[in-house]
Image (cartoon, rainbow, N blue to C red; front, side):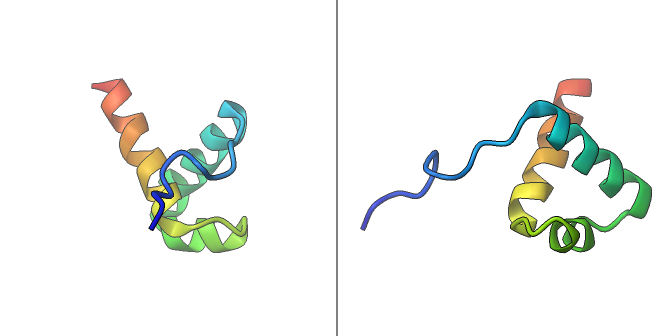
Length: 55
C-alpha cells in the first residue's frame, strides 16, 4: 500500500489564506471544506498550521 502524503493537489497560498479566513469567520472547517469541495481534514490542517506560524 502506498503512502498518500505529498501526492495530493497543491493549492496556492492565497487560496489557503482565504479558506482559513472563512473558517475563522464561520467557526466551522467542515462547512467551509464542503463549500469549496475540499477534504475537511485538509482544511483543519491548514488552520492548525496557520496558528502555529502565528505563535
